Length: 149
Figure 1: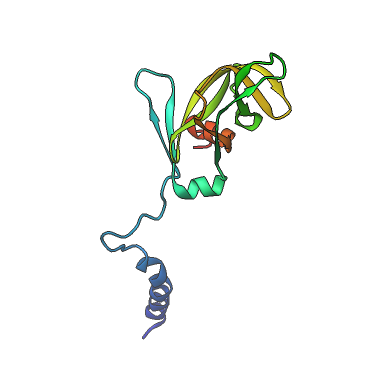
Figure 2 (figure 1 turned 90 degrees about the vertical axis):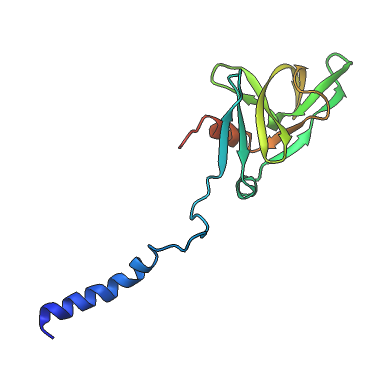
């Protein structure tokens, strides 16, 4: 075996581990699953964001139901959400992300009446008992508008 043949053999042996990964058997799982899908909602400027279970866990997205509480300002019953659920867009509009199904989120415009401590009292927004995101809200907004993609 001459010198050139030896170098060729060494190169082939070194390349084997890389080449063996090129051939995936049929039905093998994809290496990279997209953590979210974003679908436009017909007739609306809004989108539906659906996260994988892994993305939900990684982002620690949490939800809570909207409530009706007595407003300390008006002394009447009003819709209330945690302040952590409130999102301000670049134009100053206020939103929350409703969760109509597990792992699925839709942005809904709200009108804020009053904020006290960690509670936002709404003039308008989702109905009492609606599930909304309370943790991971900024990440949902970034996903909806494909920030970083």
